[in-house]
Length: 413
Image (tube, rainbow, N blue to C red; front, side, top):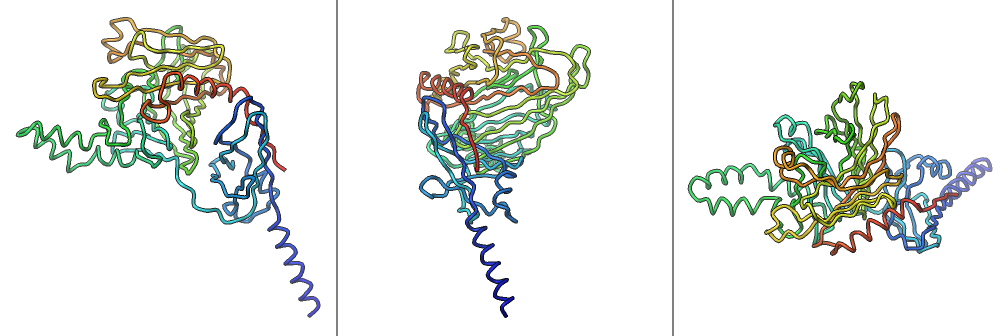
């Protein structure tokens, strides 16, 4: 009996010890401005080496007031969560065993084979897409990233927009009406089209045969080697706080290097207008320029090309400018040094015959070293949503660049 009581006591002590185990995460902001709802990450392996959990999904992340905050365990075994830290201050968060509440899903994406293999994704602020192999087989040339605007909601919208746009019955009815009542056909089309604002935003950005909203490409001299549609896709993270997709492209032959294969890892976090993109090229044996570009739809539009501070931006007039679609702000930011940032306009013949009438690009050009990774951020906002003016967008982009150069310091104990 005494032995039994002894073992029960030991078990209770061990249970209590496990219950009291916590990991303290200290986040320091070295910048002279507040970092609000910025995502940080810590190694799940480091956390669990201290908590020693059988089920790593049974944790909670607490703020300084002891309140649960959203978190996600990513495909690469990181615990990510949003933090707010005042300028030159420190904030403390706690990770411990517990039952997490259900968090609102703020990021979502998937491949849409029903729409020619689009991969589309979003957070509560903005949505994006890139094009796939089924589109390439049609002969349509679409090399860059697309933007879908959002407002009046923090809920996911992409799934519903595709469902309406691709509604088979409605599409058949439209075709019937076009023969007998074109006005009714147009009205029905507008009621389902994602090119029309139904109260939460729309697709009003024109990509065409360009780099669109921030795609990157190798260059041979001054010539952009446009990447076509991805060959394979693999969604690695899908909310609630982070979306990650891996895209692999078809082999290219560049100078003497054959079978050069591009891989892109694109990540969008909740609360951010910017996608992180990590690009690598296998089988490339020499240094080549790599450019990130934003298409220009006005030859004298509002452009910033700031190589010294590591960002480019553009105010896009939107497709169908007479439809009260507002303006789309587009930008790209670079954590490493940029060799050159500039506007390059297309020759008139190229503009008309090859680029769908687009005027050119604003480009940020760096050197790509074989075997390395090229990392940058690109994204957008809409003047009908949370960022209203060109000045506000350029402040956002400038501050985003400063954040990359003065990152939050995260320590755990």
